Image (cartoon, rainbow, N blue to C red; front, side):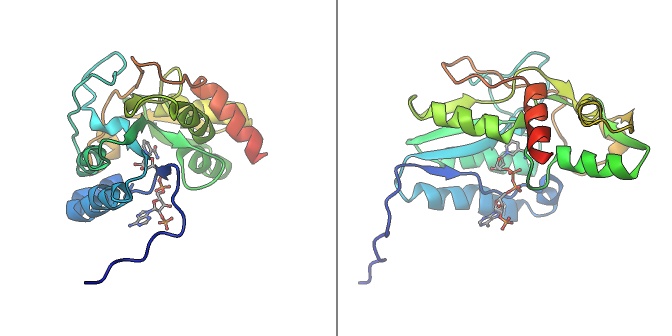
Length: 227
Ligand SMILES: NC(=O)c1ccc[n+]([C@@H]2O[C@H](COP(=O)([O-])OP(=O)(O)OC[C@H]3O[C@@H](n4cnc5c(N)ncnc54)[C@H](OP(=O)(O)O)[C@@H]3O)[C@@H](O)[C@H]2O)c1
């Protein structure tokens, strides 16, 4: 019988943010998304180390018109969202499940960086105005996640304060960055993406979770870093 070699380092906690995040691509390959988001999470949970699993506002169907709380029943509408919800279960008992929304940062591919690029090239961009969420600055999420580690394991909603549509967020990005690009509001139907998205996915915590600053404060902090 052969045994795997012991790990060189036993971490105190694992921050598991890796995921299949191609929401539309998951509709074409739900098994691929599940392999990463469920199977991958099960592998990480197999380390038997306390785990932070980053999950998503998309686990909700978006039918509510007031913020989703941890006790609200999930009802995922897309293959990506189903895989993330099953990933929550795969994270096991010794896990903090962190649901967040609309992440942006000075690095990586995200809505803020995409808008800055498009705004520099074009006089107008078309952006959906019928999906309401709370765009969350990754640094604020990281700080709140640090604060969570003193709390019991379980599901927590950690998202920016306030809410807006993606069109409102795009307009705020151009305003804060001093870019003279117009935002043309369109509908989700106009955009015609394969995967459904919740029309409303604002998250709030009914637990003693760390509070995050308002999304506009996050946007200003992100733009400061980019400058
Ligand atoms: N973006 C959002 O608005 C949002 C909202 C709520 C929750 N979340 C969750 O937050 C987390 C981070 O999201 P993000 O937008 O920052 O994601 P991202 O930019 O797409 O990054 C995902 C990371 O996962 C890695 N990854 C993908 N498949 C992998 C595999 N099979 N093995 C190892 N690594 C793999 C990628 O590695 P490579 O770079 O090598 O491809 C990448 O570094 C995810 O769990 C996501 O579900 C995101």
